Image (cartoon, rainbow, N blue to C red; front, side, top):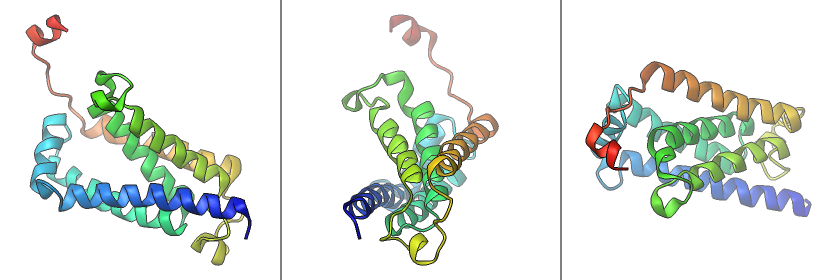
Length: 174
């Protein structure tokens, strides 16, 4: 086991744990699934309840997969897609900084997920133990995570996102 393997495992566990927390929160935290449904509806994601349920469940599953290093490039692709959708629907109009609800945080999580796919899961992973890691890092990992995540986000946004109309008076005052 090398320093690299330990560092990759630490990053996987933190990003995976973060996604698990987000998935849990979407389903059972705060306002629960009903609150997440209302939020997704306000963002223009339709059908909102289905998106809220799939988002929460997907974040839980991708988070667990990243944390344990299982199908790492695919888990990273889901995270990239989720963060891209979040950036477009909820954060892009707010600028960069997270304290203004900007896209800083989702950008960081997405890029770190692509980096994990490029680096590979490391030896402290189920992928490595099961022999699933060979050839799935480097450019292939980048293509799966970045390409798959971007494609998923574009398809989802193009087929189900209907941005709410902004009040012309509010828009003119900005």
